[in-house]
Length: 299
Length: 317
Image (cartoon, rainbow over all chains, first blue to last red; front, side, top):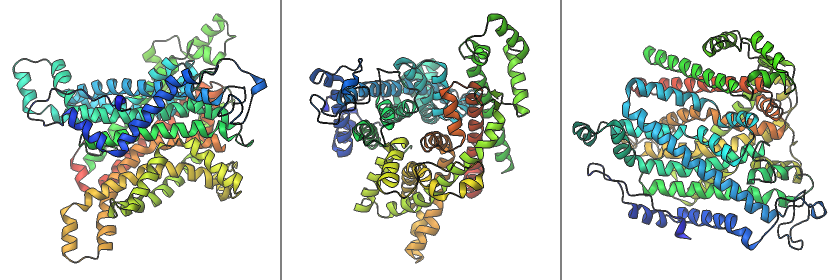
């Protein structure tokens, strides 16, 4: 299951900035038992969501009202069925696929945008930095959930549109973090040396500043994935997620809520616990990575 | 100090202006523009052109933006077509209720999280610290709506202690007159906040415990309890106050969820209802008001921190 532990790329680090080697980062990460547990949980959930349907095929596009609201343990339906006859276990798998894809893609997109933006802002400093950071302040002032619901009311939600919108509201925090590091990195001697031999700003930002913030970026990206999975769950729960027959764990919970008073616990607890589990796992990995990269607490 | 306050104020004004640009851009990204959104899909091109001319939407964007700003300065946020009411009226009716809910749950959260964080830091790496860390981690990873269900299932259904619906009164006094109905919404908001704040407080206290002044205080023979609560606790609070400022958008986002679950008649519920029927004037008006409230909130948090900690005033960000 350790296959999911992609070692972060080894940065080309100049001697002035001792950064932990990828191998030792990985070793410390695995020694961190909770983070290792997080990795295992994420790996299991990925296998469950993506390979599960091969073992437990369940039609999720056709409704079957004759088999609606069956309790767990019914023939062929280990976790029962929902109000329109979808098999809950099978639905949990395709829902997990949506949640994981959106979460991870959003985390990556937000990290890339935020890193570039923050590195540019911090590298140039002064007025450019002041203007760029006020834009970030304004973005942060608008709560993501409000912006997401407004966007969902304008555009019909799909997986791609959700990733794009979520990515565009989530890049602000990594932008701030990377900018803070870039501000201090740009005063280092080796940056001055690169500039003296005629290295361009683009080259300094991409080859020298960004690689040196890799620890901060990796740790934050992990937390971004956890936050994105929570956010998409919120949006779906509020009824503006991907439309049926597609679903995600938040959407399943939202559908299950109508049954809260009829005792259909199997429509509420499996997706609810799945969200808690995956978010917890990503947060544990993030915490472990922070220790492994020896970064001071940034959140 | 005056210079710091002036600089910080200017910054806040600029940020609010950028927010208005974002909201203005959102207004113009509506499918078919504001005319289509407000007149509906049955409008003829002639009607839309007429509407655009009346509202000034056929003028250059810069002129439109300035007119939009002018209307905002007069408190005109547009008119809700679902509620047939001015958006500013919706906001003035509902914002105080949302502030009441988020205010009370934040106070409850701070009252629990601050002592909890200090206690954890003092008992670092012992069983109690681990248990609390695990619990806050779990709470942090649980979506607020799932937490709200668990609360309703446990304390409203299994053990009928509190009603599952928030107070429905029109006035703040009316809402406060039903404290039992406030318990579950307030608690749901507080649990998530406790999870974040106690983590900040714990790490901030740990940092302070390693400072020289703690050794000095101990060496002078100050009672340990006094060292912890008077010296360390107080100094550890400053970063938490800044975090509180950053946390305001999260609090409003939380209010959106809590209000829609417990049917609490605040801004969040109004926003959610508006999102269901694509009532754009309400959506954009609320976004603007919430963002402005957030900017004011983090401004206050920064000023409060500068007041407590003189070092902040010098280090201009």
